Structures are given as C-alpha cells and as structure tokens.
Length: 115
Length: 114
Image 1 (cartoon, rainbow over the protein chains, first blue to last red):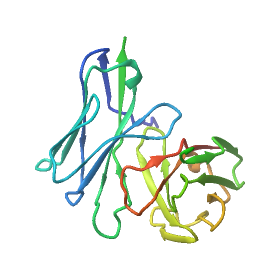
Image 2: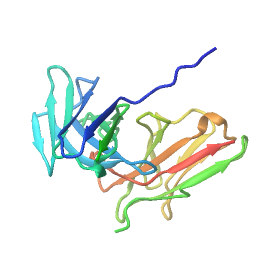
Image 3: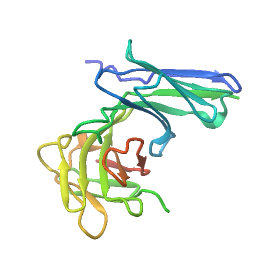
C-alpha cells in the first residue's frame, strides 16, 4: 500500500523579515525550555533558554515567549538572515527532581530564508 | 576547548555487524548523554552516564544496545547485530554537572545500515 511520510512544518520568509516559530509542549510539569538550531549535517546548537518563572527572554536577535496557560512556546528571530536557515527544535525539561537531565524534543520546524 | 567530539562522522555497517560510536566530552565534563535522531524527527534520549556508571538507560532498546563511559577514554555506544531500523544520527552531549540543561551537542555519528 501507499505510505505517507512525515514532513516537518515549514516556514519560508524573506531576508530581513521577522520569523516566528511555534511549539506546543506536552508536560505541564516541565519548567525549563530550550530552543535549538540544527543545520544540515550538524548537531543541535543551543540558541536560547527560558525557565517557567519567566514569560519572555531576549537574546541577540532572538526572543523566546512562554505561555504556560496554553503550554505554548515561540521563538522570534528579528531581521532573519540566510544563515538562519535551519531546522529549529524546542525542547522541554523538568529541571527539578531526579530526571532533570532528560530533554524531550519536539519534531522541529524547517525555516527557509529567501534572499 | 574543542567541544564535544564524536567519531566517526559517518559509519556504514551491513546488517548483523557491530557499530561502535565514540564520544569525547568537553574537557572536565564527567556527565555524558546520548540521543538518537531519526529522519525528520527530534532527538530522543537514550542514556545518561557518569564516569564508570550508567545513571539512566531508560531510552535504550532492551537488546543489542549498550553504552559505557570508562574512567579513561571516550564514552562508547555499542550496537550489536545492527538492523536497518538502527540507521539514524546519534548525538552525544556532555555537562559539568547533572541537569545543566542547554547542553552542547557533538556533530553526531550518522549510522547507515545496508
């Protein structure tokens, strides 16, 4: 029979525009969240993190927003550049208790920046 | 500091052979974590080791997979009698203390079973 492949959510933006990548997490006990960037053939690269006692955190050109009520996380990239093209993953972690080392990753979003 | 080093970068094995993946943590780090990534998926936790101890192997398949982190030398992820379904990218991360969060990952080993 015919098989249906899994496809990453994709986001295509023009160079210079702002990008917003969204992530829904599942564990209401998670209290630490991280965004990673993964370029083709490379390992995940840490971008920014946020703890559950915050709802916003800013880095260089990136902002992470956390909405615990609806278990939603977003990554905003300002003035997106071609070098930002990659797959972006959110990861969650319960930073207290015995398993505070275990990250749970989402499926990822493919960001393509058009020049 | 060279970061987390993994080798080989690419590994091709025939079904039934053994695969040995190596991970050298960042200097001074004694906590190592292995994750597996299937195509178009996020990373999934496999095992957490400290020097000479397996702390949590709850993400490891029950058979054919084993991991070690000896007192001297790199951490090794060993897959015996590989099958096509083992084809994936295997990533290692390390930390100075347990549960530091935003780990630095190595570049991974891409295992292809033919």
